[in-house]
Length: 462
Image 1 (cartoon, rainbow, N blue to C red):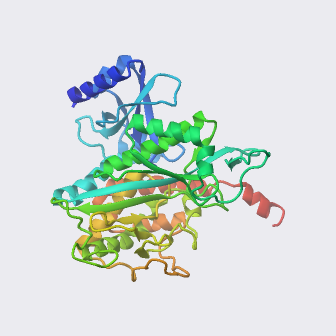
Image 2: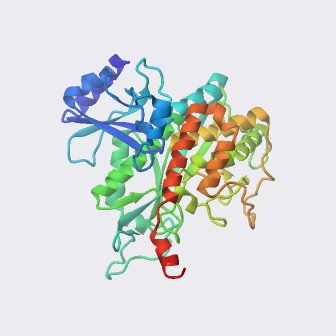
Image 3: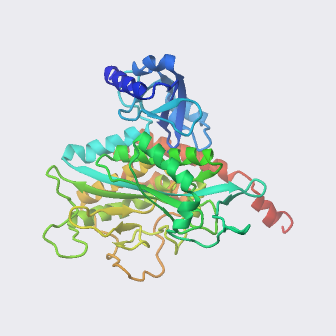
C-alpha cells in the first residue's frame, strides 16, 4: 500500500511542487468531512500509514460533539485508528491562499483491516456482499440542490438574489433555469468548474432550480458507488469553499427557509450483469418504459425499506421541515414514470440506461449511508420478489392527495429505524445501534432547546 501511495504522492508533488500542507479528509457519520492538516515533513510518515486519529472521530454529531457514554460502552478508551489514503484523491485546494493539497482517507484498524465506524466502509460492505459477489455492478449518480446566501438582518441569512441593473432592487420570482441567474454567479460557477477539474469531480450540468437563489450541479454516472459518493462529498466541499471565497455561503440544509423549496439529494441507480446487460430492462419490450420484473421487485424493496431508512435519508431536525405533502419532497412510497411527484421515479430512458431515481433524501444526508440504504432496498426487493406499492403513476397523471406512509418527524423516524428488521443485518448490528444512539442523542438535545418561537407564541399568551 505505502509504495503505491508514495508513488502517487510523488507524482502529485511533481505536478504541484509548491504544496506545503496536506488536508487529510475523512467522512463522519453525518456526511461531513473531518480533517487533519499535515506539513510536508510528515508526508512520508502518512504514506507509511503512521498518521492516526481517534476512533470517535467519525462518530460525532452535527456540531462535532461526541457522546461520552458511547466511548465508555463501546470504544474502550477511544483507541487510535489508521487513516488510509484513497487512491486517486490527491488534489490541490484552489480556493485557499496557502499552497495546500488534500487527500481522502478511510478508517482502518491498526492491523490494516477496515474500520467499523467509517460510513464509506459500510457502503463497501454492502456493495461486496449484495452486488460484486453476485457478478453485478451498480451504476449511479447523485444530484444535490443548494442555496447561495448572504448576510441578512441580525443573525438571519437571506437568499442571494440577482440584481436588477439600473436599480437598487433584487430580482424576484423563481426564475427556474434562467441564464441571467447563471450570469449573475458566473465567477463563482467558473471557479467551481476549475476546482472540479483539479479535484477529479466529473461535473456536468448547472441550472437554477425551482426557488430563488437555489442551484443544482450534477455529476456523471459512474460504475462505482463509492466513487460517486466521494464525488458528492467533494462537490459539496468545493461549492462551500468557493462560495466563501466569493463572500457568500453555500447552504445544503434540507429546508433553510419555510416559504421556499427544500434541498434534495437525488440518486440515480441502475444495475448491470457481468455481460453488461441492464438487469432492470426487458430488451424485447416495446412498452414505455421497458421495465421487467426485476426492476419492479427493486422498486418494491425500496418501498418496503423506505420507512425504516428515513433516519438515514433525513438525519437531523431540519430534514423533516422539507417533507411536506404536496411538494416535490415525497412523503409516500409511490412510484412512476417521468413524474416528479413520486418518491421512486423512472426517468425517460431506454433499455441500456433504464434506472431508478430515488428522490427522498435531503442534501444534508450522508451520501455513503444513503447509497447503502438504496442498494440494500434494491437487493432486498429482488431477493424477496417484493411488489411495488400500488400501480405505476404514468407521465402527466394527476396524483391528488398522497397517503403519508413514511415517518415525517424525527422521533417517528428513529423509532421506525430501531424497529426495522431489514437494514440492520446488511450493515451490522454495532454500527446500526451506534447510528441510532448518536442521532437520538442529537434529537433529544435539539428538543431540549427553548427557542425564540416559544417566547413569541407562549411567553405573554399563556
